[in-house]
Amino acid sequence: MKIRKFAVTDVALERSPGQEADIFVGNLVDERQGGPITIGYGRYAPGQSLTETIEVDDVMIVLEGQLSVSTDLGTVTAGPGEIVYMPKGEAVTIRSHDEGALTAYVTYPHWRQAHA
Image (tube, rainbow, N blue to C red; front, side, top):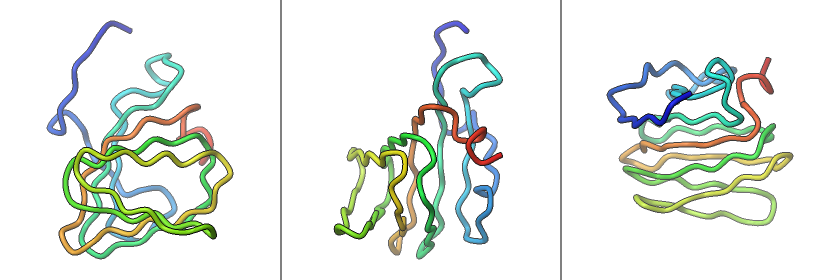
């Protein structure tokens, strides 16, 4: 794989696997390109929630809007320019606020393989 630059307009978003909420993801780099990580974008409609146990190490960068990530130990809220790290094995609930949110993410290893 060669050096590449990405923009939100490059991604084809699809509903997040196993979710009914209006939460969409799209990988730009993943196992299909032979890299060791997954890189993509996520879009959360306003007032959406997703609860899961993180199956890979996940870094989420908030680009627009605001999200809260809750665990048994508390809640962090992140807005534009802020990063949330969710380690493998952590049970989380991610909630979008009134304006929804646009995120970029990086996972290790590939999240799609972990959900298969």
